[in-house]
Amino acid sequence: MLVFALEYVKLLLPLRIWRAAAHIFLGWLLFPLRYLDRHLMRLPEAHRLGNHCYVWFRKPVPLPP
Image (cartoon, rainbow, N blue to C red; front, top):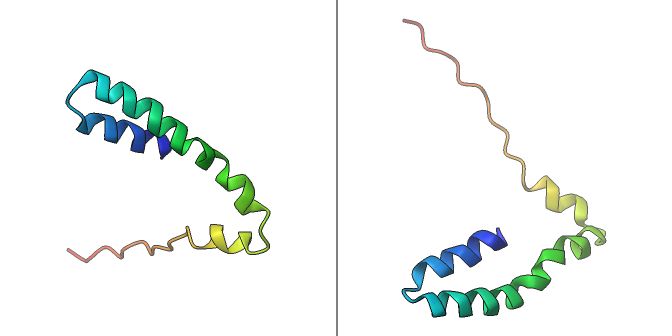
């Protein structure tokens, strides 16, 4: 997700030098977020983080012809 955010910002910039500057600046700014999951997994409430990512779907019943 961090790579997509970085590339999306680069797509919005018109000049190549601005894209290079954005790559350096945002890469430096977003780098610590790569290790956020290591911190979150140590929390006592970590089981709730994964629990909220599930969505249960029921298979639709086909209608009779």
